Length: 432
Image (cartoon, rainbow, N blue to C red; front, top):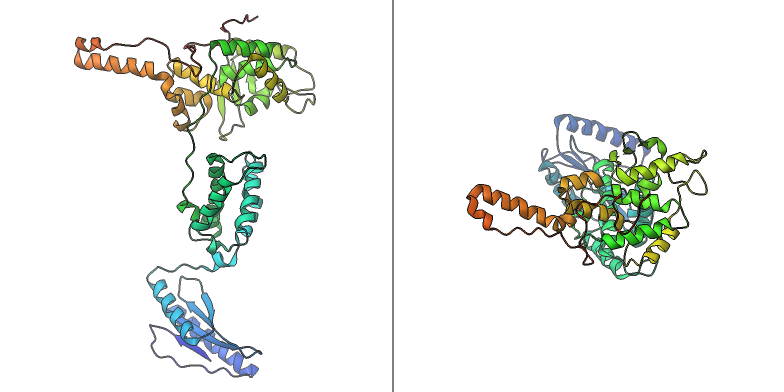
């Protein structure tokens, strides 16, 4: 038996289904004709098909139709449940409260992540390696779940498990690691929601991300800088010294420098053009002083088979400075100092020299000022002077009683850091 249930048509004739093929064709044809008529009239309607299986079990399949909405279907063991579901679904569709959950119940999280890895991850080559490993971890944890079952509670449970278990290297995972794991999963859900139509919402939005610690600000004072540069000059690799000088003078990232090619450098104008940066934007970096002299020297002895500025044994690949860098840091007696801290050194010197956050962000290539806030305390003397000048102009000469501190900011190791540092002016180091 097939029942037609519709709030717009309270009483409709029931069509009996027999076991003969002709009767089935007639019933199907009559139903299609009625459906087309209802569709043209914009009528809300639902059909219930009774299905008897060879085992004797009975199922009632319900399908709702409304112009402008996809067909929604469900199966029930009892006719009363089927009618109740049809009435509820019709009401929700009329009031605009209904969405089709079939896609979320049809796909698992593994299917979502596999498709994301195949279609979206190739568009992010810089992070593909790390994010591929993160996606693999999520598949191991929740890959068996349907998308409709991937609730914020389950994701939060996985977040806590991630923070509690050791990393592959045996160290404890930092909150920043959990943030990266949640970020890639959230982006996968966002793509599935906006472009694929697999989910109606992103459950990661309701999951609290761990608080990350304040950004690291470790930079070189005068004596540390002198010792490090002296150790680099005596390194087994003749390229380490110009690399470190270029890093301090420009604030470029390690990958940006090592992948630098001569076609990106204009020595006559003193300009480096970075095409492939971390944030994907093109950036121009000025070259002056000792850093420019070092690049001119390297240009004069450039290898004929190398287009890279800092080539390795294989001219097609950049030099690997990890070993020689570690040796130089050890010889100079630096504690807790990484290569990326050279970039912090540049930003810190700029802040101490009176550069504004916008200036620092432009030099380092940051899109926003959030990453520059960590250096704000290094420019307190400049802010104090600006505030004192404003007070004097506003309240008159009596504001001159405000004491202005002219001392230089202190570095992280108790030494006064230079306000007007230039790579070609290094204390305790003779630059040839």
